[in-house]
Image 1: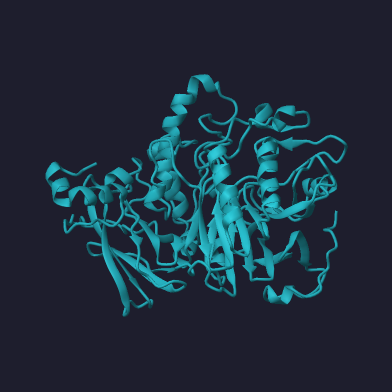
Image 2: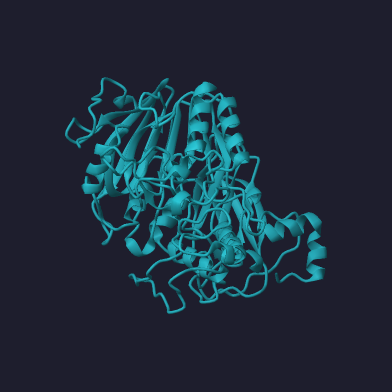
Length: 551
């Protein structure tokens, strides 16, 4: 880090911690910006983790985002970054101003945590570094806990492989009427074939796989160079977590993905994980509480939205035991039922269950990375599942869902990414017992771009619908999920585009499913062959067709 002893003394103890973290610095010390040779705000702006009195803001100074060393075209020197927050887009009603120090230690990113804002309000924000001014972002604070809230609208997304297609879905998401966005992981892909696109020149310094800090930084810079992604970050606050591709495909705890002699590479992988976590922090609107400490980061956390909803974000990678039976799709894997196997770790599992039981919110929402419902790919008597999902950690699944039922958790809904498919499914207390009660609903959202154009109901979908009586809907096009909830109803709209391998795709709602207050599980509300698309959750609350999706 390029701070001298004299500069650190000027900043002081509290300020030096802020400088290291890129948060607001409690100091009058200023570090001048260089003469910019490019736009230092080329990666855009973002906000996240909203509370009733504030949000965390984010930007990263990078006038040359794809510079081979991963430093974004920045020198060794720190730079003071100013920010301001206003009630209006023209910044005539500024409510707060401050500064943060961007340093090389964190890729010249800043994460000022703004406090003292009014609850349940929209605000606008921007940054300045020297003569350069950032794009304007918009964000919203959360309502007070317990505050009566008539409606909450959000979208959730995952799996945005840059090399698989265009981020057209984000163009449409930016125009939605939303309060926030939830991202469930695979924000980048560590292994990817890099191809050129209009306006972006990708040099030979891009390796096939990111394994160190410069490599991960370059991956994030490449992804954030996409205007649709920057637009959605600037339009709404985000809640983010990670899945596997932010580090390594199918990694588990201290073990890299399958195909390695773990005993020989575990120490090396921890160093790789530390680099990946740092790059993630440098490029996401995360609070100081999420600043990594080497190969560790705390990403499980919860946020309340009035009396209506509490969203609990999970981490199903960092604390899990290695996948049973090699982490592949298996039809004979007794080890997946072992009681000492965990996908959450004991501490996170207990924190999750206790939080669900204590919360007075009407809807309990779990932001989850990998599929929780049973996903059998054998329509016969055998059960063939991937042990990388919750199917490989049956004891944890039964413990969480059983505890939710026993403790009377009201309206539990799990939102999931990873599968590159849209699913609507019932969650049972114990899938071994077909008479086990349904205790919750799971909505799995498809990918933004991963796996290319996709299809509506393909052969895999027909097989899964035949093998899984709790799977009510399948679709494998690209897009995102839009959610609207009030005190009586959760409405889930699967928003899809017909193609991503070329830009300009239109979007439509493929199907809508609802969860009724006090009635666990999912029910179909609308599909194109049923009736005209409803405009709101209220429109979907009348008599509905509960017919199972066509197999």
